[in-house]
Image (cartoon, rainbow, N blue to C red):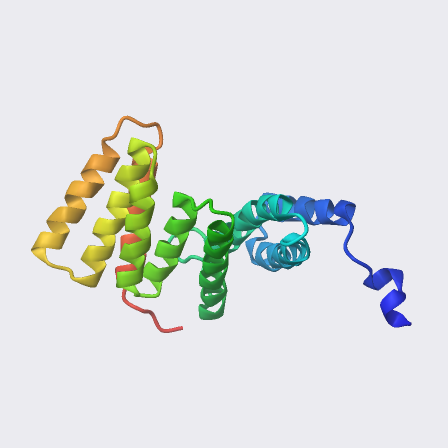
Length: 212
């Protein structure tokens, strides 16, 4: 029977490791467009492992969920248009990224280990989709669970940016400038970099659409 052929057998641990190595190589040579489909293959493999182990080995399943969350985050991050250095990202790719962000959050909930990062990427995709209410919900959740001052300032900046994009008034502009300045002047080696991400995202999400 064809189902018994070696070519159709379960992916081995060695092969899974090779997929991870391929992903690293694709990033090294800046083949971002190829990174996402390979990452999705990795995610599908991990999801299958979780399904098989969730009842018989729940602790192992939770470890895999946490790893799979990272893979889902990478897919979401590589398909978010707000970075400014990824080139054009199609609407279809953005939908895939938003879906991956939601999947990562579901893994976090199932493992009882929700992180500020997975909440942030969900907020980021909601922001680019102009679902401002959902974006605020995720950014505020990330802010509440932030355990460092720089992370709190960063999430506060994204909350302020969301308010500004949703309702650009003098008041929301002042709130954004205040949040930006607090982050930009924070005593942290990456403070200015994190602040620059806010201004880049603002420029991207307020840019006039161009004809192609």
